[in-house]
Length: 272
Ligand SMILES: [Zn+2]
Image (cartoon, rainbow, N blue to C red; front, side, top):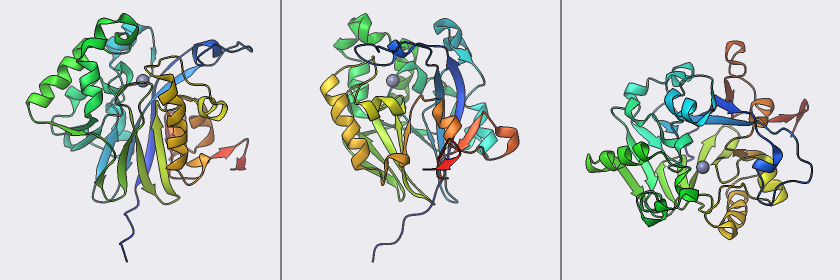
């Protein structure tokens, strides 16, 4: 009998936000245009023996440059869930867009886990197109190249188990080497979708987000997410303010800052 994988605690930390419109978030726009704000998160999976940080957010400087509302340093906020960034050994990067890969300099000991096609994309000929390059910060990309030369990037070209109870799965389309993360928790396997679906509504209505490399792949990726989750309520979108509404804070003090994803979500006060 295979051993049961260990159980991770799983947290989402909200570090930034921006006002936006519905038309900003769906290819083809939206006939019912109205406000649809976007939140920015990093995630942390913690077991008694392992800690994985999932994505590293952006810096205050990048927030100012891109006019995002910066709420807190996502890396300092890891301390709110008991992690010392200086001691973290594993950081999973779902992809290299500016809002997922800044702040790597704050992890002096970490190995960064990345799909190799993402590095090829971010350092390749496609970046001469402003439409594609816009989602990347060149200094972040250069920083990852330096980390690679220092032997601190672990590359994958496909699904991989990083430790018992935590695995990465490629699901490109939004970016070339985008991956999502499956984490074993006390409510079963939870899928941290990152930008495979920015909002619940992207996957539920089959309408991909506006930043796209390959729309067909983005549509397929919604199915890949579903195939790797026990139910749709085990899939956590990458930028949806609803995540803060559906999941509980670990404590009253962390209300609006951190939620627990290893607890079943509630919609309008109901268990779902
Ligand atoms: Zn992205």
